[in-house]
Length: 206
Image (cartoon, rainbow, N blue to C red):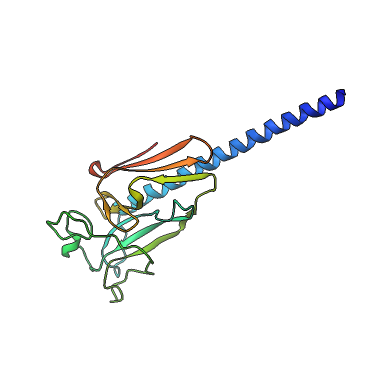
């Protein structure tokens, strides 16, 4: 009987220890996922402010993060938004918003769908397009994380040189309100949020 009691106690202790380790591991993974995501956003902003463009590349509207597949638990990636102009100065490069005619208050769409392979001035690009800047920033969200975004956010963009932040929905339309992107651990109420304030050109990481 005493042996059975000892075995029962050991079984309970092992169960508690395993549960605690699982919870700890989940917390570490969750925190790492969020920090990795916010690091990509910060890098995109820094790259847009310090625009490094090859001499044979067309003008870039900006650099951003494509999260259009993130809610489904797939990838997100950093991209460059390549214009159809060789240099800054075309009408669509000087508007209130990227890809917008000066004086217009309706923003042009960000291109969605397939990515182009490059952004060269060789005549192969006749319209604006997205190109993948860094493939090693493509990430898969861990299975313990669920993500929700207000306004159906698909793209976060930082304008070239100014660093102004814009958000676009999955159909490519500009979102003119504050937006939230929330990571939540499955089966818990633990969450972390990225809040974007375009009017203030501000992003909070909570």
